[in-house]
Amino acid sequence: MMRIDILTVLPEMIEGALTTSILKRAQNKGLVEFGLHNLRDYSLDKKHHRVDDYPFGGEAGMVMQIEPIDKAISFLKSQRDYDEVIFTSPDGEQFTQNTANQLSLMKNIIILCGHYKGIDYRIREHLITRELSIGDFVLTGGELVAAMIADAVVRVIPGAIGDEQSALSDSFQDNLLAPPVYTRPAEYNGWRVPEVLLSGHEKKIAEWRLEQSLERTKRLRPDLLKEK
Image (cartoon, one colour):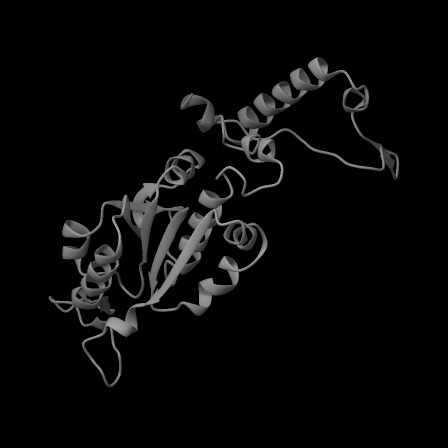
């Protein structure tokens, strides 16, 4: 069983995502276990449970303190060994399907959600093993990012999805966008499903799907072809 521990100041932003759909089914099947930890529980401020403070140097904004995060990570590490301690950061490496595939093979990971102006840089220097970003933009916090990472990772664990081939044919698994998909009725409002998909000819259908994937990738995401 894989375990994903998430450290956050806003656990309520993630709870729903972890207890619905594929993530819920994966937990029920015993494929994954989630630990959701409120960093305020590790605050040195027992009255207000603050986990942030003003930055040295006078810059605007608040910075997450090192002590609560260190205490939380140390506690978790006393319970088990971890393959990765991940920090969600806009300046981290780009999270891709390949990253999700890599992480799905691991046993235990920690995801630290960034917040406020950021975290004390010593955390990144000494406690974090990997930094991940979902794009060149800034969110209020890393909670939504952590939920997205968890979803992308868990859905490729064998058994998480009823039809495992479905995950293997998703966009980006082979650096190609997925081909168009259709369902019944075969004709609606004069709009017809491509005849090849109705033919039952598996080889021709496979060829058509590959052609469509290549065409869509070349048109919409040519950068992916440069990575092949």
